[in-house]
Image (tube, rainbow, N blue to C red):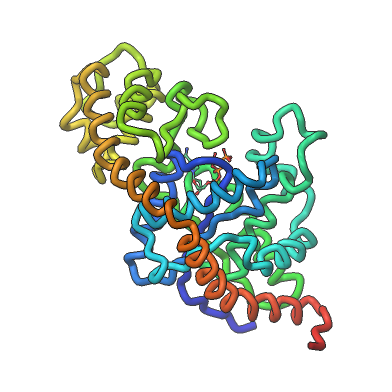
Length: 340
Ligand code: AQP
């Protein structure tokens, strides 16, 4: 079998399951913008089919999808340079997702920690979709033969599953068709934690609004949430090693570093020795300076939802032009008769 060399292509997605958080921005969107500027083809998706794995009010889902699109653009994603669209407008994702449901093994799926976290003690009552979510995610990535996926730390296991699915498909059918995708998890904020609990990740769906910074929060709200963020009584250390057993302190320093495009050591070279009473206002000022222009632009873009829909539709056309031939070839490999 000759080894196929796949052209580099970047794919990533975000669920419109609520408003964007600082975690989504630093762990994902900000890095999507950097990748867009590398010249590699970039495909970014609002994964609405994933969002409905837990209940979504239909009107809220539609609004959150458009607002997420506005968030991408306001953060610097250019819909001409990148392909920007919502997942449900490209049915090839779900079609390949079904094939992958038949490739992935129950044993692999049973090991997915995100399902266990999200289902909790309620596993009997959650949707089948929540369980099979990672096979659809593998399809989102592989329907474009994507080679690189920028994500936060929490998605690492799902990318490993994507690699396992690609490998098994290629082996089962004796082909070298799907690439073995690389996760791209880098920067100071690959796992932004809750402001209320340094052991939990910041999440859109956390019941406590004080646990997260929303991209639409105003300056006063951002400053108040940072002021109230849980910390410890010690001063900041002057080196990163001094944060090892201080999850809340580490989180705030990581956020500062990611927002300022600095390393943690650079931040601590400046802020080491400061108490949180002095560091928190610095962080709040920085967060407001970086986030307010984005939220202002999001609000402006949301005044013209017809334009947002046009961008999503055009992005979906471009995405489908790549996805349709890959799905057709997959069907041929699997033995599905295509007679029209
Ligand atoms: N706290 C985080 N720190 C760093 N990166 C994060 N991401 C999410 N939270 C953090 C990254 O954002 C991208 C999109 O995530 P998603 O919307 O698809 O789902 P998620 O990871 O489940 O994010 P949420 O905010 O926690 O959503 P809900 O509450 O609906 O489950 C991914 O690249 C993710 O790594």
